[in-house]
Amino acid sequence: MRTVLVTGGTGTTGRRVAAFLRARGVAVRTASRHPAAGDDRHVIFDWADPGTFAAAVDGVDRVFLVAPLSDSDPASAVGGFLDAAVAAGARRVVLLSASAVTDAPSGLGALPPLVRARIPEAAVLRPSWFMQNFVGSHPVAIGIREHGRITTATGRGRVAFIDPDDIAAVAGRLLLGEPIPDGELVLTGPQALSYDEAAAVVSEVTGTAVHHTSITVEELTAAIEASGVPHAYARVLAEMDEEIAGGSEERTTTTVQDVTGRAPRSFRDFLIDAHRTRSAHSAPAVA
Ligand SMILES: NC(=O)c1ccc[n+]([C@@H]2O[C@H](COP(=O)([O-])OP(=O)(O)OC[C@H]3O[C@@H](n4cnc5c(N)ncnc54)[C@H](OP(=O)(O)O)[C@@H]3O)[C@@H](O)[C@H]2O)c1
Image (tube, rainbow, N blue to C red; front, side, top):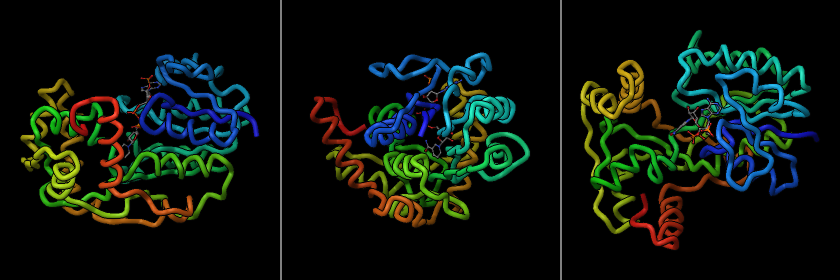
């Protein structure tokens, strides 16, 4: 095996994919715009600068692909990148998409058909919402930490939140060369929870009361916009909550079990670990 390129290599999923593969002796090059602390096999790579593609794909036969989120037409940059990767010898690409993203002529939905068309061995991962959103710097985590409140437009809709370690384990196995399963690779945790139920688990694990408030899509759009996000994108994000309210994420799948041979981690176990890690570093609360 030659080198595996992990784009988004400093992000939530990419750095876990890189760690998974390196722990198994695979040569991994991580890529993103900023240097990765302590990672001397990182290359500076910018989706907005095609001049950075050649060095990233040199000697690469497999790619973990995290697309440019802020780009309204990501297929343009990703198409050029895939051409460079194929010319360099890449045969397999594992694309990180999302359960909320379906195939479409433009936007993020254009990427799965593009990757399938250009790459001999293409896998499209469609994870549900990340458990990681409840810790760290995500707006949900900030709401918990600063206000003891989660604000969404999801109503009573449920989401089968997934641990990013489980996504990385699936991606890692496929990048090791395991057969790509047929059909949609929708990745979920073991249980679908409403945000009310998730808030109750956070309260129980941290010992600090956390509440969920569901507001309208219009109110959420305005709130996201007030945090500096352009109106159109704020609306897109708020409408994703509306989909959840309608039941779009209320499902669990066996994909993590099927590919990795073990069950996905529960939300409670994820939070307990996150809380323990934070406590060990003397940080306040889980989020
Ligand atoms: N959060 C969720 O609940 C959820 C659920 C399902 C699917 N997803 C999908 O997950 C993906 C995000 O993955 P993630 O959460 O692992 O990433 P993340 O933590 O948001 O990090 C983004 C990564 O992309 C890199 N990056 C950003 N802009 C870049 C650019 N212009 N050129 C090159 N690299 C760039 C960043 O590194 P630098 O800053 O160093 O460039 C970083 O490594 C999205 O496609 C999203 O749709 C998320």
